[in-house]
Image (cartoon, rainbow, N blue to C red; front, side, top):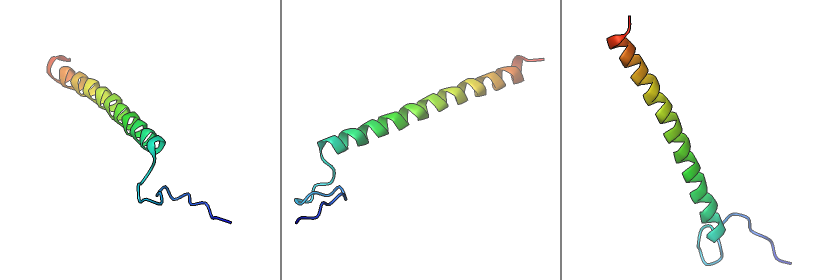
Length: 57
């Protein structure tokens, strides 16, 4: 009886399979989208604060 290895490393030494790399790439893309979204919010808030500092009452 053979034991199943769930470590992600194949017998030939490759790490992750085709599906594994696809999920990994999707995770990186999702993280980058979140960073861009938060960055856009911070730019809007900083621009608003700068505008109110210069032109606000």
